[in-house]
Amino acid sequence: MKKVAIVGAGPAGMFAAHELAQHSLEVVVLDMGKPVSDRNRNEPFDLLHGMGGAGTFSDGKVNFHPQIGGNLYEFLREDEAWSLMDHIEQIFRKYDVDVIPTDNERTRDLERRAAKCGVSFLPIRQAHIGSDHLTELIEAMGRELERAGVQFRFGKRVVDIVREDGAVRGVVLEDGEVVQADFVLLAPGRVGSEWVGRLALEHSLDVTYNPVDIGVRVEVPSIVMEEVIDISYDPKLYVRAPTYDDRVRTFCVSPEGFVVKEVYRDEGAVGVNGHSLRDVKTGNTNFALLTSINLTEPVESTTAYGISIARLATTIGGGKPILQSLGDLRRHRRSTWGRLRKSPGDVVPTLMDVTPGDISMALPHRIVTDLVEALEMLAGVIPGLDADRTLLYALELKRYATRLRTDLRLQTQLKGLYVAGDGAGVARGIAGAAATGEIAARGIIASLG
Ligand SMILES: Cc1cc2nc3c(=O)[nH]c(=O)nc-3n(C[C@H](O)[C@H](O)[C@H](O)COP(=O)(O)OP(=O)(O)OC[C@H]3O[C@@H](n4cnc5c(N)ncnc54)[C@H](O)[C@@H]3O)c2cc1C
Image (tube, rainbow, N blue to C red):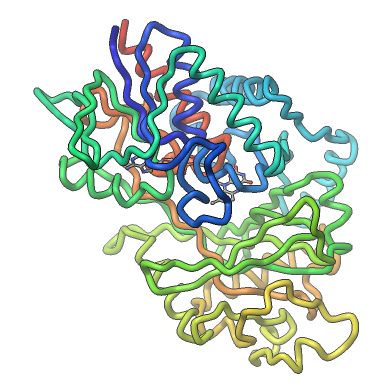
C-alpha cells in the first residue's frame, strides 16, 4: 500500500487526510503540537500548534467562497471551485456546523446600495462555529479519521524531506527518525512558512511571492455597523480608491469585539488584530481595512516591505500600536488622549495599550490616501463610518507565506511532494486551507492512476 506523510494537522492536513482515507492509502499525520484535547489556549505554543492548527482557538468564521481565504480559480475552473467549496461545506455540516441563514432580499438590497456608491459587496455563505464548538468538531473529526485508519503522531517536528532519484521518499523528524513515504504533503500553516521557505532554498525548489496587505484596524460604535452585520456576519466590501486606483477591502469584521495587539517578535515590531468573544461584548465593532501591495521589480519580497513599514510604525508608536481618530488624520494633526476623549459621544478604544499619534508619519502617503478614500466611499453604504470620531489603529499587516511553485494539483517541482494551506502560501483561512488540502489529496489519488 502506498504511504502518504502529511506534515501538519491543521485544516489543510485534516481535510487532505479525510479525502485520502477513503482510498487504499496508508496515511500518517505528523504534527509538532498536541492532540486537541491536550491543547491549552493560554499556552502560546498550543495556541497555534496541534490538532486543528491555528484556527482551533479562533472565532471559527468559515467563508465558503472560492475567492475568500485564497483563490481557488488559480487551480480549478469556476464551476469546479464552487463544487469543491460545496463539498467542504458538506463535510462541516456533518459536524453540525450550520451556515448562517441569509435573507436574500436584504442581501440583494445591500448589493444594490453598495453598487450605487462604487462599492462591491460580496455575498458569501458563512458559518460561525465559535471557539467552544470548534474543539468538539476537531475532536470528532480526528476520531473519525482514526477510525478510517489515519495515524496521528503528535510532538513530532519534521525538519527535512528525503529525496531520491528526483522524487520525495519521506520526511526526517527532529530526533533523526526517518518516516518513509511515497508522497509527502506539506501543510505546516503560517507557523511553518519560514521552514517551507528554507526547504525550498535547500532543495532548489522555485518560489513566487504573494502580495502583502497593509492597513489599519477601524473601530466604530457597534450601532454604526449593526444593519450591515445583520445581513452578513463578516461583510466583505471592496472599493477602488480613486487617486491611486488601488483595491481596498474590509477584512475580519469583529462585531462588538476587541482590538488586540499583535507582536511580530522576530521582526521587532507590533501591529493590531481584532476578535469577538461569545460571552463578553463591547460597545464597539472593529474591522481591518487593507490595501494590497504587490511589488515586482527590483523588489519582489513584499513581506520585507511590509515589515519595514511595521517597524517604522512601531518606532513612532514607542513600541505600541498608533491610535488616531479619522478627524485628526484629516486635519493633519496627531491624536492625543485629550482629543480622543473630548466629548461623551467619542468612541472608547477597546485597546488602551496604544500611543495616540499620527499614522501618516508611519504609513506611506499612498496607503493613507487609499484608506481615507475607502472609508469615505464605504460610508455611502454604512453611514457614520467616516465620522471624525472613527478610530484607526496602525498597523494591520497581513503577510502571506512565500509560495512554492506548483502545478494545478499542488505538486511541487519535486515528484510526490505536494503543498496545501497557509504555510505554502496557497490559502489564508480555514475553508481555503481545507480546500487546498482536498486539491492536493485528489492530486495524489489521481497520480495513482
Ligand atoms: C487567532 C486566529 C484567528 C483566526 N480566525 C480565523 C477565522 O475566524 N476564520 C478563518 O477562516 N481563519 C481564521 N484564522 C486563520 C486559520 O486559522 C488558518 O488560515 C488555518 O488554520 C490554516 O490552516 P493550515 O492547515 O494551513 O495551517 P495551520 O492551521 O496553521 O496548521 C498547521 C499545523 O502544522 C504544524 N506544523 C508546522 N510546522 C511543522 C513541522 N515542521 N513539523 C510538524 N508539524 C508542523 C503546526 O503545529 C500546526 O498544527 C485564524 C488564525 C488565527 C491565528
